[in-house]
Length: 91
Image (cartoon, rainbow, N blue to C red; front, side, top):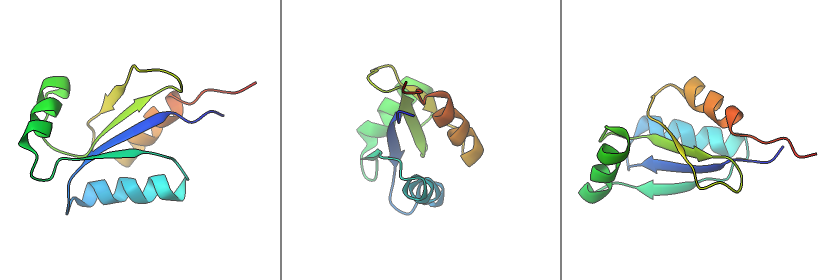
């Protein structure tokens, strides 16, 4: 299976963010972090894109795609389900 592209919007001291980082490490999922700590402009981007200013937000795209889906739920199960939906089977 081909891995999706994952971007984690996070901040220092965020318990939910840490849980996601640990899950990604355990599952050996590559991801990039956008650190919103002390970055109000980044929170404004989240507000514009997803209607939220809190983190974590996880953006997920299928391999070789620039179209991301944002997951704003704080439930790990919701993030996992979205990751699975964005995996591609490699023949």
